[in-house]
Structures are given as structure tokens and as C-alpha cells.
Image (spheres, rainbow, N blue to C red):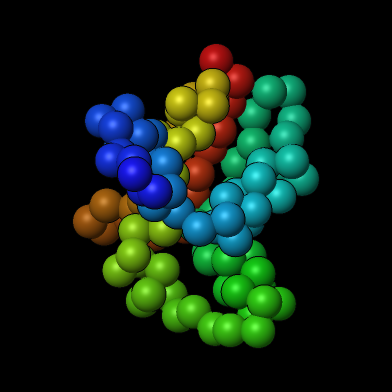
Length: 105
């Protein structure tokens, strides 16, 4: 069999669901912002990095496509890699930027 069925663990961790350019964007920001076991950056910063990476490869991707394909849903992938991950977005009547926060377990 050339292609093996995906396992429940692979589905749970998001294996194969997120392109390399997305993980590269998150990894880059994680490394750049790491201080005392924590790294925090905004959703808009990640989206801009993803778009830059896709454009560097000679293509384009819109914000809408990033959201439609769930490319920002990386929490389970990074948790499986040993990170504690928090995503926070403003609720009704709040006005801060959505952000990701990663910390060592």
C-alpha cells in the first residue's frame, strides 16, 4: 500500500494538515520572541509571515483562505511537541489583538 491510513493520533495532533510554510511562520516567531520560556505574538503577525512565505515560493494566499483552511489551528501540533499553547481573541466589547502564547511545560 503506497499510502497508509492516517491514525487517530495523527489526526489529533494535526499531522499533515498544516503546510510547512505555516509551521515555519510559527517557528520563526517562536524563536524570535522567546524569553524566559515564553513566546507571544499576534495572530496578524503570523498571518503576515505565512503570506510572506507563500509569496517567496511564488504564490499568494489571502487571510480568508488561511482561516478557511484552518491553518492557524496549530495548538494540538505544538502541544504534541511539548509546548503549552494559549490562543486568546477579543470577545464581545473587547478591543485587543488576538494572540498566541507558547510556554515550556
